[in-house]
Length: 201
Length: 255
Image (cartoon, rainbow over all chains, first blue to last red):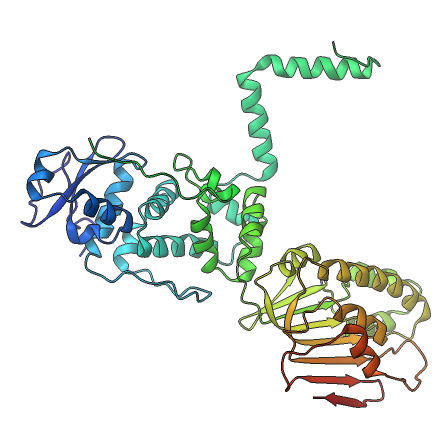
């Protein structure tokens, strides 16, 4: 099944027919609503426990408000639920502690994760937050593959990270932009020190 | 309205505290994510990742990932420029023959899944301080081969410095766990000093080669009993081996 055809229903976007079975409604922090099947939800330990604890019936799902997931935006949540729908019914892998970990990225997952770094890290964060073990495995494998065999300079480019020097300079610039007087005070202090003054005040 | 606003995972580390979905990049990921990424990387990539920025450096050192090392080998670090300085008054042929024996190296070489990687000594320090680390083999080679007295004097100074660094690296809160230790030393007191830092319970075999080509050959009066006493060896099991070898190729096996 292709990524595009994964049966996650984004209520705001399309009227894709939903199969007649138990599903749940979730809402992202930017108010996008999704309908996800009960079987797909089982991939997320966190959501599975939540819906079990709520004890919703089909009527409740329709009549009660969607379950809000406050820390995840719609774009990320859509990827998460697409992944869960595609892998519904699959066994949750158990970590056997082997290093290096043997993880294969299926074609569907590779396509799903063919996204920019920012969104990829949001997806990883969401996978961890919602405790979706296999999604966390494949997404971390993708991040590791990006690092394999690279020098520190290449890694900075891959992960779009500044060097420590660049980071310090950016922080200083941001601080100065926020409080231009701070720089003047610092310069005045340095000048007084040069002139031999012991106290600034 | 039902809200799925779960608390963040337990805040048990600095990494966990800074995990932030609003600024999604690798240093801001939760500890469990960093651990997963590191599980998929070989040791060379982990050392490179550690050098990307301070945040990753501290995250990785805190996690202390399993590098799955087969062996760690320490040898006196030698650079092309140091060879030039050792033999500044010597002929080119002497320099070349020395180069033939000693390739330029950083001091520490690690072997992981049949791949050899040279790492700087400061990386070796954090590597050996990992309490999860159990080495299959630890090799320490402190020997020098040169008949040029000037060069030996200069090399000897560097060797002394290196030996002190080695002891500093090996000295940690826990004893280093290694199944097999192979030491190439100038005298047994060097070996005894190194063995103090190894956990005797992890040891299955020790091999000591005592050779010094810079000195006139003499019969080595080796007292392995004394060495064993001084390091209070309590080997891992009854099949453990203790081999000693002198420049006269005499070997001893203790079971």
